[in-house]
Amino acid sequence: MSNMVVFGSQWGDEGKGKVVDMLAEKADAIVRFQGGNNAGHTLVVDGEQCILHLIPSGILHPGKQCLIGNGVVLDPFVFCQELDKLAAKGVDVSASRVMISKKTHVIMPYHCRMDAARESSRSEDGRIGTTGRGIGPCYEDKMHRCGIRAGDFADPELLKQKISTALEEKNVLFKHLYGVEPMDAQAVFDEVLPVAERLVPYLGDVSSAIQAADCVLFEGAQGTHLDIDHGTYPFVTSSNTVTANAASGSGCSPRVLDRIIAIVKAYTTRVGSGPFPTELLDADGDYLQSQGHEFGATTGRKRRCGWLDLVVLKESARLNGPTELAITKLDVLSGLKEVKLCVGYEYKGGTIAYPPQEQNGMAYVTPVYETLPGWDEDISDARSWDDLPENAVKYLRRIEEISGVKIGIVSVGPDRVQTF
Image: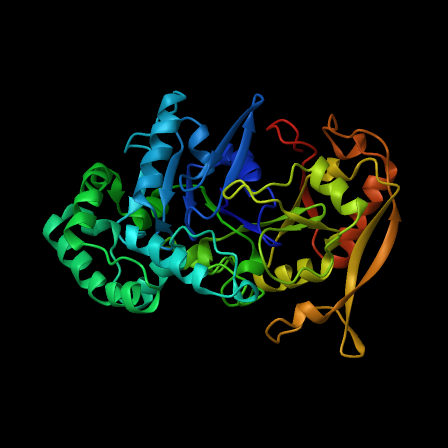
């Protein structure tokens, strides 16, 4: 059976969790390969909402193995909270089902403090819009080769030593650059040790688990245009969100990645700062925000809304090589007299088909739109392509034509059954 990769093709919040939940039924194992608890995947099963930040969405399918790869940065406190919430719902979250790579880097309390101190020290115009959850500082320590990995939790003496070493430099920054109270290494160790001990049974060899499974579903977090290299830098996340990182972030060969599914919201949203060419600051934008219930699953922040940007989608296709598109939230567009698609940008006196490569270049583009007729029908009960109104089908066909990628999945509501 083919392995599958699910990735976000926009700025995140495309509905990846729902599609992963649907595809997990066919997989033996589901693996997270990047990001941390700055991502929230919202699932609705039988009308009940469940939001996951670290544990793969396949956890709601009994018997599926859920893996957290080396490319993730793991907040052990958030992980334990998720375990407890799922267990309270009767979900099996034993170590036989959930595994953390020993190579996964761990978010420590000083990472969260550093994140908050930096963001608050920036001017209003210079703020990136970080979630403040310590993601970036943890990745920094990873690259600086002074990070704490999940496997270190099995060795308390090594853990204590690494905390002490990390705080030697960080306390200088806290005190003299950011004007915040330094942290005591022993106090941090005492705070972390109980969750460290709890996590030890979950540690394992994720690479071997992937190799042993017949079908693996790789679950991306955030979106392509938040990628640290290929996104709208500096308004990006701290990891590579593109499909290629599914291999390096989990410990397998890229040759095992077969089916690559781009999740595309039927319109575009973005949380936080950064350029957004098709953003709507009018009644249509308010309509999308209201009908789509567009609030961040992790931060609760109101999402900015705009028309579907096919320039962004074409760039995602170029970077990720999707075999198909999964269109989500198509039902939100019902009731609009017209719907628009951004098919190009005006930039520096010409028209371009892909985003400019210069830093912040997208802040200076003007979108070129095609206008299509909308539809009034409620499509939330659609269960096949034939159930969709003619104008909705025309909209989807135009997305296929311009993106060059066929649509394989359509979602018309939040519940598990509202996908075909």
